[in-house]
Image (cartoon, rainbow, N blue to C red; front, top):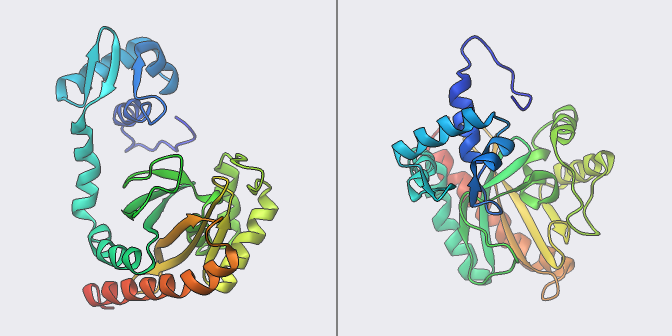
Length: 260
C-alpha cells in the first residue's frame, strides 16, 4: 500500500480505512463511490464497505450517492492536539509575535515529505489558499519545511526528496534535488530559512527551528508576508530577530516542562 512496509503487526484494514478518509481533501470535499475507490486504491466493493462503516460511526455522510466527511472527523485531529503539548505551548508565543510585528505567525511539524501546521495566528490573509491548523504543504518548498529538513543529514534529506513530488508551484520553486540539498545545507549552516515566492508568487516567509530539552529540532516557527511589502532584506533585518527570539522563548518553555 503506497510503499508502506507491512509487518506481521500491520493491520491492513485500518490502513485502508484511513486511506478512505484521506481520499477527501480541500479539492475533493465530496466524492462518489468510484472516486473514493480510485483515490484510495481500493476496489469498489471494498470502498463501499469502508464508507458504510465510517457512515455508521458518524465520520461520513452520504447524499444521493455522494459521500463527504462529517465534523466528527475533527475528533481525530483534536485527539492529537489534546495529547500533544506543543500546540498549546507555542500558541501564546505566536500570538505575541504576530501582535508585535503585525504579520502572520505559524508553527509546524514534519510528517514525512510534508509539514503540518500545529499553530497559526493570522492578522490578515496573505495567501490565496486559507491556512488553518492541520493544513499541509510540501516540506521542500516551504521555509519551515527546510528548517525541519536541515535537522537531518544529507542522506536522510535526499531520501525524503526522492519520496516527494517536487512540483513547480511557481517559476521560482526549486525542484532539482541537488539544488534543494544545497538550500537545506545553507539553512543548516545559518540556523534559519528564507523562502521567497517558491510556494506562491509574492509570498515570502522566514522560519526558525524549535528544540526540545535535548536540543533536537521538533518543530519550526515562521512569519509569512507579502514580498511586495517587505522584501528579503527587510525580512532579515526587521522580522528575523523577533522570530528567532520567539523560537528561543519556546525552547525555554519546553526545557522547563521537560527538563533533561
